[in-house]
Length: 294
Image 1 (tube, one colour):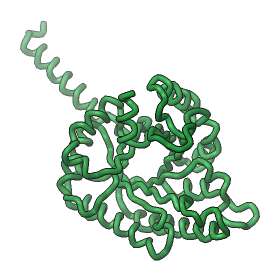
Image 2 (cartoon, one colour):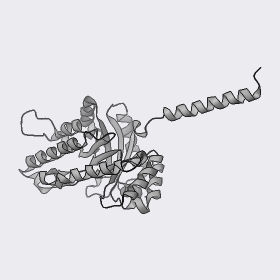
Image 3 (cartoon, one colour):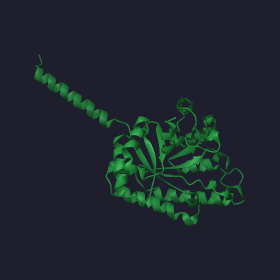
Image 4 (cartoon, one colour):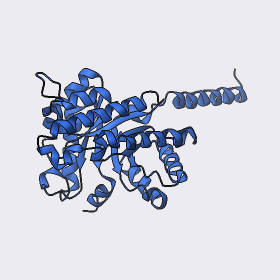
C-alpha cells in the first residue's frame, strides 16, 4: 500500500499541475465580451486611480478608452495601466478631433501613434497600451450639412487610411474608432453602388464602437453594421450614452438603473449569437458614475 508521504506528494504534484494548466489555458479577458468605457480626463488616473479601477471592477469593465495627453508624465500611464492589467482590464489610447479629417492635421494622428509606439517600447509588457482608438467625428462640423460633405468624407477616409498605414506594423495593437450608427446610410462617394462609410470603416479597423445613442430600440439601429462585420470577420461594440443630452431619447441620463440594465440585456440577448458582436461600451466614465447615484 502507498504510504502517506508518497500519497501526499502525488496529491501535491497533481494540485500544482492543475494550477499551472489553469494559468496557461486562461483566456485573454477580451476573448470574452467587452464591457468598455471612455475616460476623457487623463489627469484623473494620477489622483483617482484607485477609485476609477474600483468602479471598473464593480461594473465588470474590461476595456478603457483612455484619452491621451502627450504632456502628461509617462509614469502616470505606466502605473495606471499596470494596475488595470492586474485587474484584467485592457487600456486603449484614445484621441481625435473633427479637424483630424483633413490632410493638414493628419500630423496629429502620426503624433499619437508615435507617442504610443515610444511609450510601449519603454515600459514592461503589463504596462502597455493594447490598442489605439480614434474619435474624429467630422460630421459635427457645420460644413457637413452643405455641399462640402463629400470633401469632408474624402478627408476622413484619407486620414483613416493614413492611420491604417501607421499602425499596420505595430505588434499586438488593436485599432478601433467611434462611429455613428447611421453611417450605413452615407456612401463613400457619389458613384453608383458606392459602399457605405460603415462598410469602408469596418473593413479597415479591428473593431468599431457604434455610438448607438438611444434609450431603446438599439438593436434595430445597428443591425446592418453587425451583418457587415459578420461578413468581414470584424468586431462591433455597441455604445450607449449616459450624459445629459439635448435630445433626451439619445441618453440613459435620468433613466433608472434597472431600465438601463434591461436595455443592455436586450442588446446582449439579441446579439449574443452574432459572430461580430463584441460587447457594450458606456459613454462615459464621468456620466456613468453619476448615473449610478440616481
